[in-house]
Length: 117
Image (cartoon, rainbow, N blue to C red; front, side):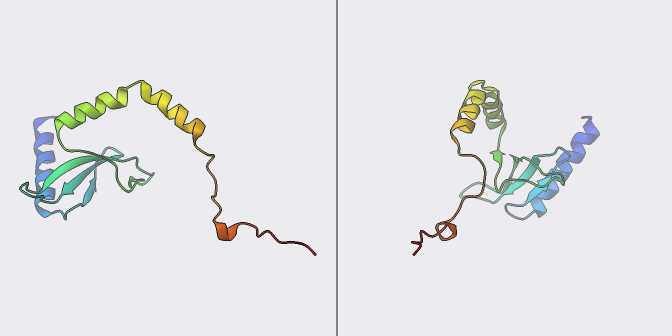
């Protein structure tokens, strides 16, 4: 990104920080990457954070809350964790033990045990 692009990005972010509502989420040009305005908290002023959240075809988040990243240290740690090869094995094992996706029947929907006379 050139200097003009960086200036424009900083200007957009600064305006969002000043004018955005607490917990407001803005889409970015990268699908699944959002900017989230955090409210002031105790002694900290309002801040912006990155939220990673898988997006649908229209660019809207698919989960209620995504992965929030507030500083470069967290970004580095999350990158290292995502690259961890053990996650693939863990995900495969979880898929094996989880029940098949399908409709869960509620007790009131189950067939009643009726004695036929």
